[in-house]
Length: 325
Image (cartoon, rainbow, N blue to C red; front, side, top):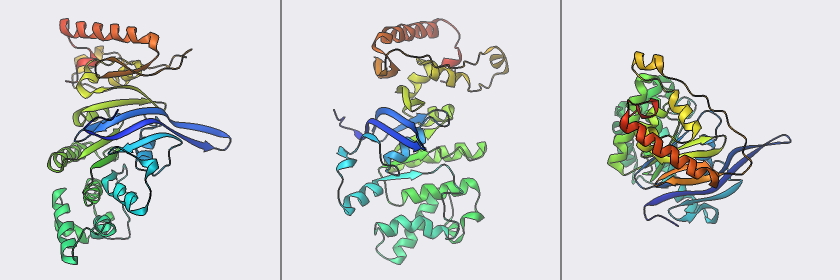
């Protein structure tokens, strides 16, 4: 059933790649929704399928199985150049590599204006120039940067160009595919704060893909945790950090350093070892708004675990699971 504020819905998505005689399940039957105006975080270690999910949504890959709905329309039913062009305007992507995602042979002006030209959004050459200058200022750069080439800019500046290019066509959804992982730590917070500012000003919706859980918690409203192509836990950002239920989520949280030497000395890092299952699981809502990948018989166990964490958090000092408020 479609939620009134639902912008994107993914149902039973599978993405299988063929490598010789071997089939690799990059995405293995996942479902989730993204609501208008929110930031939906998709996190997990390298190779879990999160970037493949984003690229399949934007149709860089054709889904092996499953359905993708944008504004209630099944992308499989889109017909005609005009409708596909509108979808590509509405959904943009910011890529991980600010070096490889920009054409080194053309100036910044042409990189930003590419979408403006394709979608005929400028009334004249002067209007086109004003739009490019405005976009550069919006992302914290000077209009003079329009005459430079990508190699003349720093990594953070290049990523700002990537953001300006995405904004140029006035999208509704931006898929941020690990947009800060290639940047220096000192620059990462600047880019994330810029994205949050742009979201407020332009009513944007983000699918934010990353492996840095601390940064994902900072920017996201809801978070889905992926492991080996499946979503193993999904919930509100604060809820998931305070009350992690799936063992894999616990292990990811336990690996985040906390700025307290005494706390770090006594904290135990958890290692997740996947247990063989005799019964196929799926994503279940074990408590309101909090979903965990499990079998029906495991639901009471996770509900009891939630109640136990709730009790401990109210009666004792915070463990790693609650330290990130």
